[in-house]
Length: 169
Image (cartoon, rainbow, N blue to C red; front, side, top):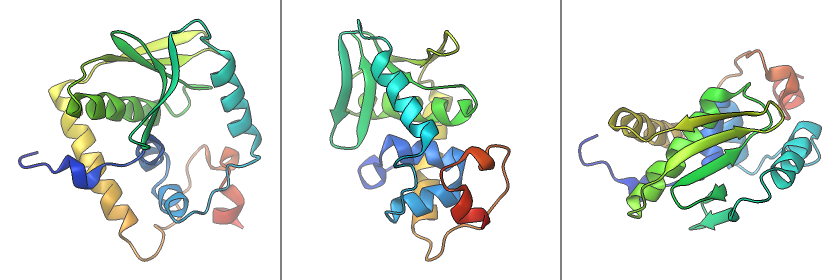
């Protein structure tokens, strides 16, 4: 995007992920309504993340108190995910990390690790991916500027979401 103001649109990786997963979840999470605490799937995901790839050099690198990279290598960054059920959200999140690092003058490739599935997926920051990130950051700002949460939209993974009862009760 021409004259894209990254500084005013910086956000967290989880917000980028939630944009793809569910805009309502994004809005609620941004308002401090967090349902993940104590939710089994989230706890299992944290355990898998902590337990996997212990030999990697740098783990859990927090940058600018905004992005938390699971694995930082010399030429790559890695995200550890429980499953690829939310593959599009995982991809956009790591693309955002790559984009963010590029703004800091650091070029890397991304790897999404699915240890429970014994799979990895390489992610590269292309020109098209940069445009996708910029559009996503603009959309996040639009969603978060709303006075009310977005309408509930039924998705296949809703029953396994920490926010399910809040949205569907």
